[in-house]
Amino acid sequence: MRSSRRNTVRRGCVGALLAAVTLLTSAGGAVADDPSASASPADGESPGPTEAGTTFRTATAIQQEQTATADASTGDYLYWAFPADAGQRPTVRAKVSLPESATRNGASTWQIDVYDGLRRRQACMYGHQTRKAAPDAGTVELSCVLRTVRAWSEPWASDPLPGSYYVRLTVVGLAEEDLGLPVHVETEVISAGRGGAADVDGALAEPLVPGASAVSAQGGSAAAGSEPEDGWSSGWWTDRWLWTVGGGVLAALAGVFGYSLTRGRGRPSHVPPGL
Image (tube, one colour):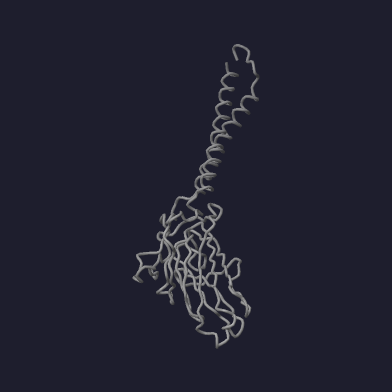
């Protein structure tokens, strides 16, 4: 009778363990496959902005996965603002179409910089932040991969935090005679979701200066705020909680299962009557 009970307990524990493992793997897959993190724009979506700001205060607001264009003059400072949330690793790309080589007097060097909402310059993990275009080059492409945006950081640190980020593009090396020549620019921001692996304990109460200086691309009026289309996800909940709770459940079930095995082995399978 006791042996039957032990077998029932073991079967129950094994079933619970398998159910917990299935829940975690399926939930983890759902988080990893969430299309909202890296989905491409749907067909028929409105085109991106066709102009750029010339200062931080007039930066043109854009969304991630949206291509912004602008016609400008060589030597102008061009600014865009985009939102980035916790767990994202933004990649900023810019492509500059240069004037005809016959109209230029030499090579040019272009640079792209990214600043957070407090206008602190953010370092690029890798990419081509500064590039030199040969006198006969038709285009020059730049990129900057930022560090993963964290949900919280020490006040003295310059870690990327949720909020608005500014992109600045300009030429930093040029023959004086080439100033003012027309150029066409395409800018895009995409992100790779890093999930719980990049999370830290704690979270900001509000995004870091969410679009305080962003300007809408439509009429030039001050935007209410540059934020992700799906809203800010920063807060107490991250997929780290899923794995933490799941790990605790698995540990508890494993303890019960191990105890039942140890208890069963410590007693004879048949106990004489009267004992």
